[in-house]
Length: 105
Ligand SMILES: [Zn+2]
Figure (tube, rainbow, N blue to C red):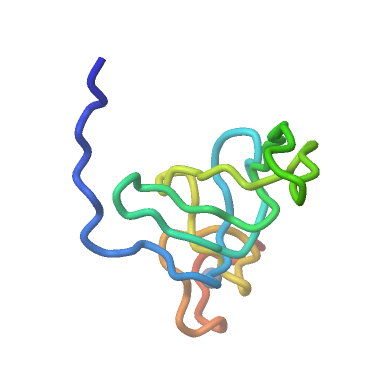
């Protein structure tokens, strides 16, 4: 079966180091730092979020193998930029925290 062709994103929705909040899936509600953005797959990797365990066999003398925890990519539609002032993920982070419209009352 051929994998459906997806158009790579023309612009990165997030930058490395950005704070984002996950809005769907297992890690819903969690906030973390963007480590990588994959424009071709429309995914981001967020530090310590959506982790999966990989069982690896020792392949060389220096490779002990064992269980490795790593972050799985999350689709960009499932994360939002995190606004400190609102303390939640928002479509657009408020430029001036004082004029934050998304703030909880
Ligand atoms: Zn805000």
